[in-house]
Image 1 (cartoon, protein in one colour):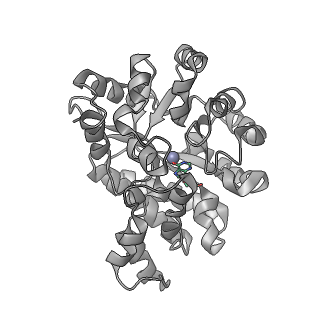
Image 2 (cartoon, protein in one colour):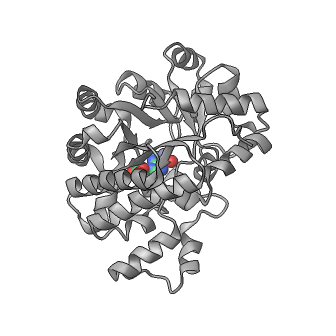
Image 3 (cartoon, helix red, strand yellow):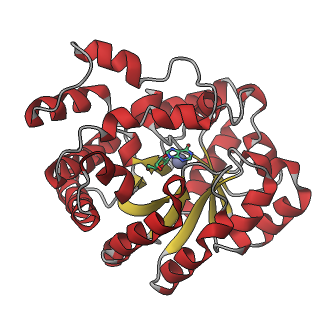
Length: 320
Ligand SMILES: O=c1[nH]cnc2c1ncn2[C@@H]1O[C@H](CO)[C@@H](O)[C@H]1O
Ligand SMILES: [Zn+2]
């Protein structure tokens, strides 16, 4: 279990990957959107990952149910607001909620700027209601290509005062980081920090690209980092963090042998690795569950668990 004397932090949590069946059901009813299910529990049966999926893209497909009920900017606001409430209810002291405007806008062709504005306002209202200071990370969904990501970036940069960092997520194998150099240059120039999904579906070369070409200061997942000693040394020297997500890695197939997850190797090398949820709405988990997997399945000791909590705090993009 985690140590209650240290903050509980979740640095890698998709708010559009956390639209649980109950919320999907409510939003569908309120907006008169037809779902191909007759009951909420039938819906839940399809949304939640059972055991694991065959690969990353099949896992990501599960996210489609949630975004299929984003019929208006108000629905996006609700999802953002409810995400603050859910994170608070889990006992999370600080989190950086990430979202992809294009991914949220897609089903109903919503204007991207309106989506970002709604999410910013929803989190702001949630923070006020729950006495939290949760932050936002904007995502470019690499799966939809370079041009789409330019539009997505523009909508994020329009609200850059309310967003701490930029991320790249989606199909890592077919859309490598080097396609997005310009996007990240512009984001850094606008003062955004950088975290990138890398070394999850592809190898260490993908992590090198994220760091050297996009300026990543944190790597999402990064299981492939363990294969490359030079990369480990480089990340240590430059204090580049790894955002580990144990259940997600199992469910996507990125790392199925959880007992021997590289999080252990990362800790042994002194890398700044944190523990995170990724997509709680489809994984059907919370942050405390991830800590219990870390201690019971990976067998990390109390000092290692504490270190993970401290790393999460040290790697926050909002310095307090
Ligand atoms: O584990 C993951 N790996 C890669 N991309 C992800 C993961 N979880 C969600 N997304 C991606 O993030 C955006 C929504 O926030 C979508 O592009 C979704 O595919
Ligand atoms: Zn992720």
